[in-house]
Length: 422
Image (tube, rainbow, N blue to C red; front, side, top):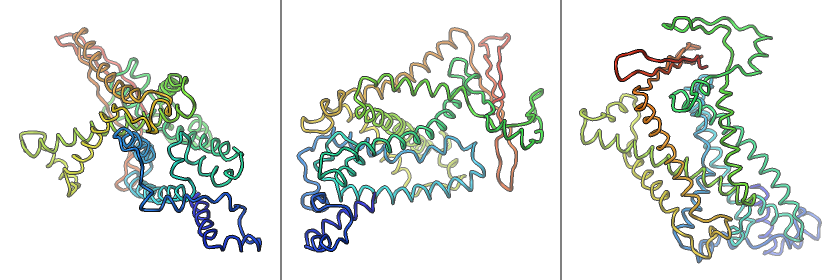
């Protein structure tokens, strides 16, 4: 895409200098006619006009930033599945930094190629920029919609790949939540089951028997095979279908925009604000109370990693995310690209639904505490990991024993459940 965009911009330069006509006469030119080469490369890179706009309302900037954040998310997904990694301490830093660095370069080049082809006015249209790129590059001389249809298929294929990755990691997040006992039938959703590939592989290559979990009587890991959280997969499937069904009344483009924006609003803004706010609290508590508080500075110093700009980065991130959470409730101007008529849904729906997710979590936690109060018992969760050393300095968690026990507030018998979670 970057190469095509730069060729397009170069063609405009040759056309402006008169070289394009000469090349066209000799036949030494790509199949891009002069009428298809617009002035986007000139107008978009003109420092005097490229940033001129009549839209200056806060809502438009905030909503645009939500979509920009969505494009930059995803790098954190591997951290949700570190137990699936081989040699994570060596593999994760190298490949994560390499992937992020490469994507930063490619992402920048792709956006520059967009500016070489797409006129600034077209960015306010409620269409996919990639489809618009190929439309202006190949179909703009006629009424053909082939580029839109082709890119719709490619975008759907890309979304399918994104769904696979998110499903892989999100199911494991839900499994961890279930291990903490906050879901109904938590141990059912927390348990792992042997994958078909692991079962087939065990038939071909025999797996040596593993030893028992140290200190736990009656629990062993015989013929250990790779397991996957199938029940958590089902829970994630249900939540995904639910999101699709509640937005089925929107047009396909509006539905895609809403789900993308709600992802950024909840997982980036809300969770980002909570995490950075908590980190800021720990830093300030350590600064003012020292050893009498959480003593975060001493604990973080033991790891050898304390950013020199601390706590400036936490303050900036907390303020920025908190501002965006509440600024999303501001009504966009009439000529904004984020009005109800252009977006397909009222502007206040997105932040309302996003904050409702947070409040629903608080209500769920309150309900769990209410159940404990009603039963006069406290849910105690104990987790016993089974870890094997695979190489020098590298360890792998083969399985985990999770136990849920209801401890009575008064002296008496306790109810306990346990499951071998792999």
